[in-house]
Image (tube, rainbow, N blue to C red; front, top):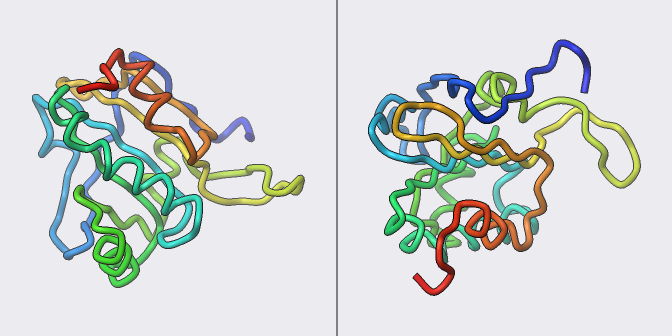
Length: 162
């Protein structure tokens, strides 16, 4: 990570954004004012790790909603790729498109990362929990796709039996 890259932390105001969802509808963080949001960044729709992670959120979205959380997935994919991914995997939450990676950069979810021992520029698999007032309560960088939701539930104190 270079000095110019952003890294958000608990207590920071979440950067605002307006992006298109898989259907081309505009979605803004401001739309969720008064609600808790889990915003997660993933590298690419329909790849094995991203599919694992999205399906994990899909399978837990109702219990996360019961605990007051709305899930939003965000990638650089274009709308047709997001539509296909959502349909094929029966994703039950919005997938947002950030092709210019402006929101990725604002959240520190894009930059140098290690991939198979090489440093490359790319999306850092990252998750942010944002409270009702738009303040970050949890900022997790370089998370693992497998077991991510279980780890998140534990950190948030959400009963896994819910």
